[in-house]
Amino acid sequence: MTMPETHTPPPGIRLTPEPLTPQAFTPFGDVVQLASDARRNHVAAAFDRTSAAVDPRLWVATVASAAQLPLDLKALERHPFSTQTFLPINGCAYLVVVCHADASGAPDLATLRAFEAAADQGVTYARNVWHHGLTVLQAPAKFVVCMSFSASGGDDIFVPLAAPVRLVEAERGTP
Image 1: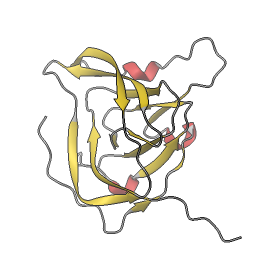
Image 2: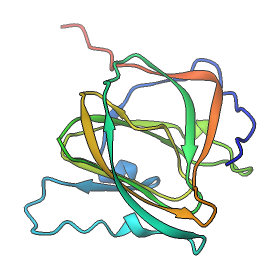
Image 3: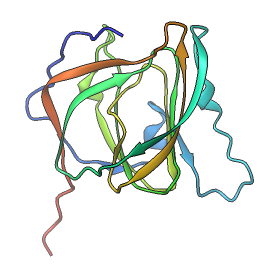
Image 4: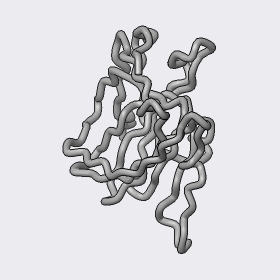
Protein backbone atom coordinates (compact mmCIF):
# COMPACT_ATOMS: atom_id res chain seq x y z
CA MET A 1 0.00 0.00 0.00
CA THR A 2 1.04 3.58 -0.39
CA MET A 3 2.58 5.33 2.57
CA PRO A 4 0.74 8.39 3.89
CA GLU A 5 2.75 11.47 4.61
CA THR A 6 4.98 11.42 7.68
CA HIS A 7 3.32 12.66 10.86
CA THR A 8 5.28 14.48 13.54
CA PRO A 9 4.50 13.62 17.16
CA PRO A 10 4.44 16.47 19.63
CA PRO A 11 7.96 16.99 20.99
CA GLY A 12 8.98 14.93 23.94
CA ILE A 13 6.42 12.10 23.84
CA ARG A 14 7.51 9.56 26.40
CA LEU A 15 5.33 6.63 27.37
CA THR A 16 5.62 4.13 30.17
CA PRO A 17 3.98 0.80 29.35
CA GLU A 18 1.22 -0.11 31.78
CA PRO A 19 0.00 -3.66 32.42
CA LEU A 20 -2.38 -4.84 29.70
CA THR A 21 -5.95 -5.25 30.96
CA PRO A 22 -9.11 -5.95 28.97
CA GLN A 23 -10.73 -2.81 30.37
CA ALA A 24 -7.89 -0.46 29.39
CA PHE A 25 -7.53 -2.04 25.93
CA THR A 26 -11.25 -2.11 25.01
CA PRO A 27 -11.16 1.13 22.93
CA PHE A 28 -8.48 -0.47 20.71
CA GLY A 29 -9.57 -4.11 20.47
CA ASP A 30 -9.73 -7.23 22.61
CA VAL A 31 -7.42 -8.96 25.07
CA VAL A 32 -7.37 -12.76 24.85
CA GLN A 33 -6.75 -14.36 28.25
CA LEU A 34 -4.88 -17.57 27.40
CA ALA A 35 -4.60 -18.76 31.01
CA SER A 36 -8.31 -19.55 31.14
CA ASP A 37 -9.34 -23.03 32.28
CA ALA A 38 -12.00 -23.13 29.57
CA ARG A 39 -11.66 -25.99 27.11
CA ARG A 40 -12.06 -23.48 24.28
CA ASN A 41 -11.13 -19.81 24.30
CA HIS A 42 -13.04 -18.32 21.40
CA VAL A 43 -11.42 -15.33 19.70
CA ALA A 44 -14.41 -14.08 17.72
CA ALA A 45 -12.96 -10.64 16.99
CA ALA A 46 -10.11 -12.27 15.04
CA PHE A 47 -12.47 -12.65 12.09
CA ASP A 48 -13.91 -9.12 12.01
CA ARG A 49 -13.34 -7.82 8.49
CA THR A 50 -14.93 -5.85 5.71
CA SER A 51 -16.23 -7.45 2.53
CA ALA A 52 -13.00 -6.31 0.82
CA ALA A 53 -10.96 -8.66 3.04
CA VAL A 54 -11.55 -11.84 1.08
CA ASP A 55 -8.40 -13.80 1.94
CA PRO A 56 -8.24 -15.00 5.59
CA ARG A 57 -4.75 -16.04 6.70
CA LEU A 58 -3.19 -17.68 9.73
CA TRP A 59 0.57 -17.91 10.22
CA VAL A 60 3.28 -18.29 12.83
CA ALA A 61 5.55 -15.27 13.28
CA THR A 62 8.99 -15.70 14.81
CA VAL A 63 10.77 -12.81 16.51
CA ALA A 64 14.47 -13.51 17.01
CA SER A 65 15.50 -10.43 19.00
CA ALA A 66 14.09 -8.93 22.17
CA ALA A 67 13.69 -5.19 22.70
CA GLN A 68 14.79 -3.33 25.80
CA LEU A 69 13.52 -0.11 27.28
CA PRO A 70 14.10 2.68 26.59
CA LEU A 71 12.91 2.04 23.04
CA ASP A 72 12.28 4.57 20.30
CA LEU A 73 9.23 3.87 18.14
CA LYS A 74 9.73 5.08 14.58
CA ALA A 75 6.58 3.93 12.76
CA LEU A 76 2.99 2.83 13.23
CA GLU A 77 0.74 0.61 11.14
CA ARG A 78 -2.95 -0.08 10.71
CA HIS A 79 -5.20 -2.47 8.82
CA PRO A 80 -8.38 -0.94 7.37
CA PHE A 81 -9.99 -4.17 6.11
CA SER A 82 -9.36 -6.62 8.94
CA THR A 83 -8.58 -7.04 12.59
CA GLN A 84 -5.16 -8.47 13.44
CA THR A 85 -4.71 -11.03 16.23
CA PHE A 86 -1.49 -12.09 17.99
CA LEU A 87 -1.41 -15.15 20.28
CA PRO A 88 1.94 -16.01 21.91
CA ILE A 89 2.86 -19.66 21.47
CA ASN A 90 5.90 -19.96 23.71
CA GLY A 91 4.78 -17.56 26.42
CA CYS A 92 6.68 -14.29 26.43
CA ALA A 93 5.96 -10.73 27.47
CA TYR A 94 5.58 -8.22 24.66
CA LEU A 95 4.73 -4.58 24.04
CA VAL A 96 1.41 -3.31 22.70
CA VAL A 97 1.38 0.33 21.56
CA VAL A 98 -1.84 1.76 20.09
CA CYS A 99 -3.65 4.96 19.20
CA HIS A 100 -6.79 6.04 17.42
CA ALA A 101 -6.96 7.77 14.05
CA ASP A 102 -7.68 11.47 13.77
CA ALA A 103 -10.35 12.91 11.44
CA SER A 104 -8.01 12.57 8.44
CA GLY A 105 -7.17 8.93 9.27
CA ALA A 106 -3.64 9.73 10.50
CA PRO A 107 -2.45 8.54 13.92
CA ASP A 108 -3.86 10.64 16.74
CA LEU A 109 -0.81 10.65 18.98
CA ALA A 110 -2.77 12.39 21.74
CA THR A 111 -4.49 8.99 22.25
CA LEU A 112 -1.26 6.97 22.21
CA ARG A 113 -1.10 4.24 24.90
CA ALA A 114 1.54 1.64 25.69
CA PHE A 115 0.90 -1.69 27.42
CA GLU A 116 2.99 -4.65 28.49
CA ALA A 117 1.22 -7.89 27.64
CA ALA A 118 1.89 -10.85 29.92
CA ALA A 119 3.01 -14.18 28.51
CA ASP A 120 -0.54 -15.55 28.78
CA GLN A 121 -2.29 -12.70 26.94
CA GLY A 122 -3.06 -12.30 23.27
CA VAL A 123 -4.48 -9.23 21.55
CA THR A 124 -6.78 -8.45 18.66
CA TYR A 125 -6.26 -4.99 17.20
CA ALA A 126 -9.55 -3.58 15.92
CA ARG A 127 -9.70 -2.50 12.28
CA ASN A 128 -8.06 0.89 11.67
CA VAL A 129 -6.38 1.06 15.08
CA TRP A 130 -2.85 2.39 14.67
CA HIS A 131 -0.28 0.19 16.41
CA HIS A 132 3.41 -0.49 16.62
CA GLY A 133 4.80 -3.66 15.08
CA LEU A 134 5.27 -6.82 17.13
CA THR A 135 7.93 -6.12 19.78
CA VAL A 136 8.88 -8.76 22.33
CA LEU A 137 10.64 -8.43 25.68
CA GLN A 138 11.97 -12.01 25.64
CA ALA A 139 13.27 -13.87 22.61
CA PRO A 140 13.06 -15.98 20.63
CA ALA A 141 9.30 -15.65 20.52
CA LYS A 142 6.61 -17.24 18.38
CA PHE A 143 3.07 -15.97 17.78
CA VAL A 144 0.07 -17.24 15.88
CA VAL A 145 -1.14 -14.32 13.75
CA CYS A 146 -4.58 -14.12 12.16
CA MET A 147 -5.87 -11.49 9.74
CA SER A 148 -7.49 -11.20 6.33
CA PHE A 149 -6.09 -9.60 3.20
CA SER A 150 -7.88 -7.70 0.47
CA ALA A 151 -8.20 -8.99 -3.07
CA SER A 152 -5.20 -6.82 -4.00
CA GLY A 153 -3.10 -8.86 -1.57
CA GLY A 154 -2.62 -6.60 1.41
CA ASP A 155 -4.14 -4.73 4.30
CA ASP A 156 -1.15 -2.84 5.65
CA ILE A 157 -0.68 0.91 5.93
CA PHE A 158 2.58 2.07 7.51
CA VAL A 159 3.38 5.60 8.69
CA PRO A 160 6.92 6.61 9.64
CA LEU A 161 7.03 9.08 12.51
CA ALA A 162 9.06 12.23 11.86
CA ALA A 163 10.35 12.05 15.44
CA PRO A 164 10.48 8.90 17.55
CA VAL A 165 8.20 8.26 20.50
CA ARG A 166 10.20 6.92 23.45
CA LEU A 167 8.99 4.04 25.60
CA VAL A 168 10.58 4.13 29.04
CA GLU A 169 10.47 2.01 32.18
CA ALA A 170 8.45 3.21 35.12
CA GLU A 171 10.45 5.32 37.51
CA ARG A 172 11.09 3.56 40.77
CA GLY A 173 10.29 5.45 43.94
CA THR A 174 12.98 6.04 46.48
CA PRO A 175 12.82 3.79 49.54
